[in-house]
Amino acid sequence: MKRVLVIEDEKMLAEMYKDKLDQEGFETLSAYDGEEGVEVALREEPDLILLDILLPKKEGTDVLKEVRESGEWGENVPIVMLTNLDSRDYIVEAINKYSPSYYFIKANVELNEMVEKIRELLNE
Image 1 (tube, rainbow, N blue to C red):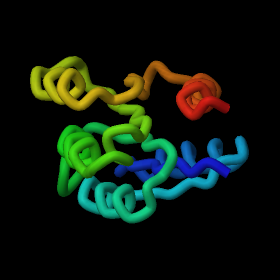
Image 2: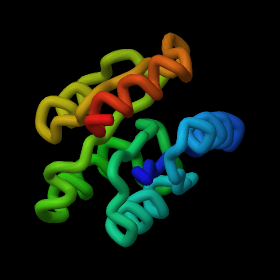
Image 3: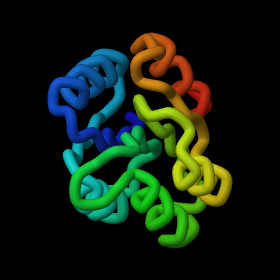
Image 4: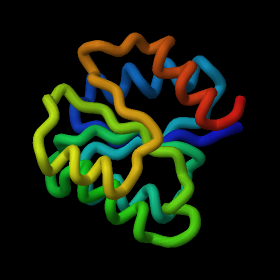
């Protein structure tokens, strides 16, 4: 069973993602701020990370950087960024430098589309 870490501070969204992923046969881990997200990611080494950009305690761009710089697992784990933000310079810079696997605008994505992309990234 593939494990997905959802790092999302909006509890309603986090639970919605978790419920859908659980229904689709994934084991889902959750973190509700950037610091907790890094801790869970490095400890559990999930197969994929869904990562919100705007998070308390540590922004998603910093989480992305720390995971990518953590070693072989972090360099290779698929990371799907989630945001409702437009393209701000620091976000574009982090995306270009630390290569998330995919990027969704939360308001424009259907859960089934997200699950399809996760399956694709995990070669399922």
